[in-house]
Image (cartoon, rainbow, N blue to C red):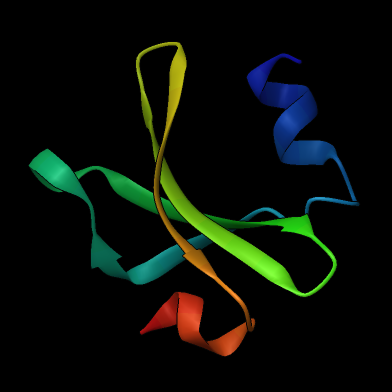
Length: 62
């Protein structure tokens, strides 16, 4: 997938987390990875670095 396809994919529910920053000030994102699970990660060049897995939607933002 390209980054544009990733951003536009309705099934992932890709969202920026505006209240926090990742390593080196990178913007953090949350997205659906399965039924009831979300992940928090950030872009690192052409890679998507995954930071944490959350069993409920709200905990991904805290």
